[in-house]
Image 1 (cartoon, chains in turn cyan, brown):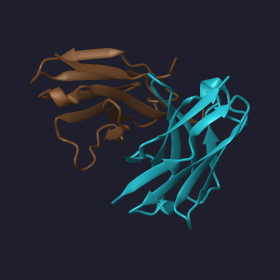
Image 2: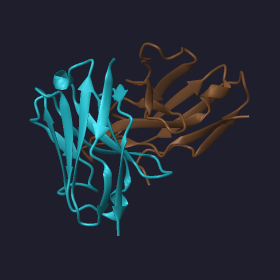
Image 3: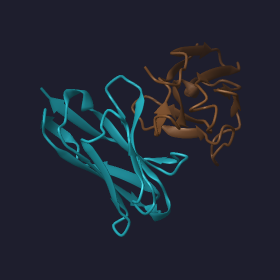
Image 4: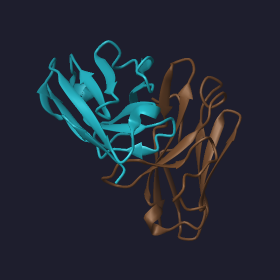
Length: 115
Length: 110
């Protein structure tokens, strides 16, 4: 079965860190751009970051620039998001998605940042 | 406030045709393609349309997309109860060097 599975979410105090993972199965991510998209409770989708197939190119939303780092391990077929200096406003469900089409999405992992 | 704008809500009766707009600028929709996503309650988003008007396999042909200038549009014909969901447009913004999503449109099937 083709799927993306996120993990690593949880409750963290403001200023803390978390590392999210997105494991792919049923296909290899090595050919694709990969993305992180988040959704605060009751709110819309917000793009967070993306990384190209060989990790030579990354971009970030202004709201997370300098605090979040996207990376990938194609050998492990896994995408990561290192989140530092977390803020209450980073509270959201974080989804990973594949390709410029955003054609495959994981089920999401909830990150809750407490004040 | 997103740089691409969607109406917050839309509605229609079963069998009707509904359109949802996505308005941007020359730095985003004007120079790049538009994708559309459906998010059913409590689930992850699903791509309906990419590259302005391309439907991935498995998406019913009741869903169609178009783009003109700095605006994109999603049309749903033969509206069904199961189409009740949130719909989002997305595109790349050359000025922000970022993907941007519209704020979302909540579709109600009356």
